[in-house]
Structure formats: structure tokens, C-alpha cells
Image 1 (cartoon, rainbow, N blue to C red):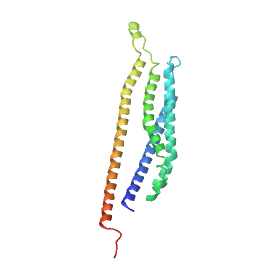
Image 2 (image 1 turned 60 degrees about the vertical axis):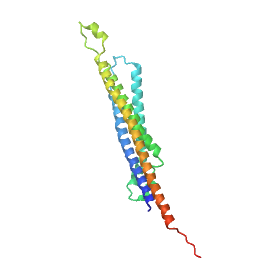
Image 3 (image 1 turned 30 degrees about the vertical axis):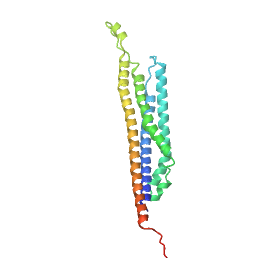
Image 4 (image 1 turned 120 degrees about the vertical axis):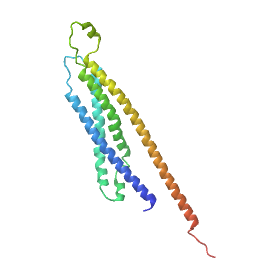
Length: 223
């Protein structure tokens, strides 16, 4: 096997292991977060005596549904593709890497990775905020006779707890978005640098081969 073929084989196996790791991480994350969202919707106790804002209930229901749907879609992709990659990765044969569907299903793998880690995590953060509002909003103030006028103009303890959780979660959401963008740009720059290095190595090998052909011509002429 030539050096170029060996490099291509190593690159193919690296892509296979990376795709397998992404699918495993996506399946674990999706199963965990979707299960938490379902438990949160089932276990949340709505106060019948409290008049919830209609927008809050619609947002909570829609966020939970979309969250579960996104993670189940990522879980479905991982469940369908991962066994085929696992079967190839367990075979100790260098040429078996071409039997893996990770190259053809590359876009599906990246889609599952994005749904599980980026979109799903952002929806999960929004789910936590909405759950805090639904849970704490019905809490009312203890009646106080002397300060009834001041209490009526201030927020309730439930609203204070919900506002606090929102004010904590919003900066974390912004930090998560900034980190995701920075991580993606760093990953793209790393891949670009690695490809440039590989191209430089191939160019040097090509120059060496050309110089070798020039110094040692294959044909000769006899008089």
C-alpha cells in the first residue's frame, strides 16, 4: 500500500470513529432530555384555582412538544445508522471501512448531532424557564393586614422566583450560543488547517516523485 492510499484509509477510519462517537452522544443526550421533558409535563401540577396566562400554557406545551420531537428525531437517526457503523468498526479489516454508510449518511449524522446538541439544548433551557413560571406563578402572598396596600403593588413570591430563574437562565443561554459559535468556528479552522497540511504533504510527495522521474528516466534510446 502506498503512502497516499494509507493516508486515505486512515482518514476514512477517522471519519468512521467520529461519526460513531457523534451518534452515540446524540442518542444518549436525546434519550435523557426527551425523557426529562415528558416527566416534567406529566408531573407538573396545575392549580385549578389559578388563572394562568394563555400564552404561558401554549408556550410550555409547544416547547415541550417540539423538544420531544426534535430529540426523538435525532434518536431515530442514531438508532438507524449506528448499528451499521458498529458492525463495520468491529471488523478488523482495513478495507471494510468502505462498507460503512457514514460517508453517504454524513448529512444525516450531522443533522442528528445538531438537533441533539444545539437545537435540543436551547429548547431544554427554554423548557426549564417555562417550567419555573408554570410551577411558581400560582404562589400567592401571605395576607398581611397592615401592609395590604404595599403588598398589592409588589410582585408575588411565585413571580419573584420565576423572574429569578429567568434572569439566571438567559445569560447561560447567551453563553451557550456564544460557545457553540466559537466551537464551530474553531472546529472549521482546525479542519481547514489539517487539510492544508495534508495538501502540502501531497504536494511535496508529488515534487519528489517528479524529481525522481527526471533523474531516473524510464526509457532509453540505443543507436
